[in-house]
Amino acid sequence: MPNRFLRRFAAVAATSVLAAGAVTASSGTAQAALPTPVSAATARSYLTQLSVKTENRTGYSRDLFPHWITISGACNTRETVLKRDGSGVVTDSSCAATSGSWYSPYDGATWHAAADLDIDHVVPLAEAWDSGASAWTTAQRQAFANDLTRPQLIAVTDSVNQAKGDKDPAEWLPSVTGYRCTYARAWVQVKYYYKLSVDGAEKTALTNLLNGC
Image (tube, rainbow, N blue to C red; front, side, top):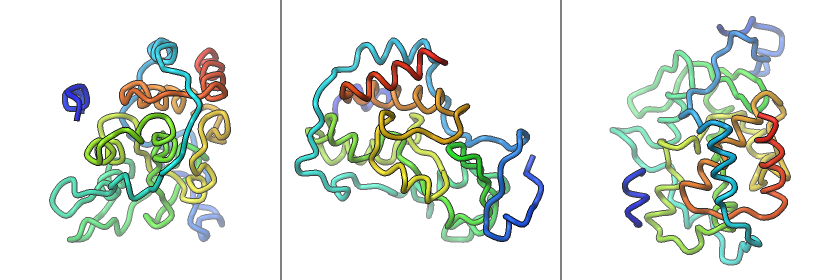
């Protein structure tokens, strides 16, 4: 692994919707406590330094990115993010979350069951592969897939994460418009740190987003 990687390596009121597992977040609901992305100015600077290349998904498999590794004790990456991003999270002896609440900043919903949350890779694994990770070692891909230091992992509504899939910001953005600047800043920071490229449409979308921050 290159030396650079090693160096920098109030709840909402209950409504009838709660019965379905989600409520709309109020202004008093805490947002997910993921690492704060770089400023918009820094992100704009980073973006100008990213290579613009055509993406290539040849040979991609999710299994090439070992994820949800053990972080501490019985807790793997998913469980660690759930504890970090939730409020009042209670876990059992195997580190599984048994109760708590989680606010999904992508869609503004609050959930009360961990099963309703996915841990999103802000820059999806397939997107990383397309833009440079195909040349990485397995250790580098594992570090990327479990990165708790950069704003790369966040607990969000499972169906929203599935709708996002492998899309980049030219193809998908959070429905909460007030979060889009944060999302763009996080995306660019992760791509810059890992020396990943962008395609033309992706760079245009990010430029427009960051210019509006």
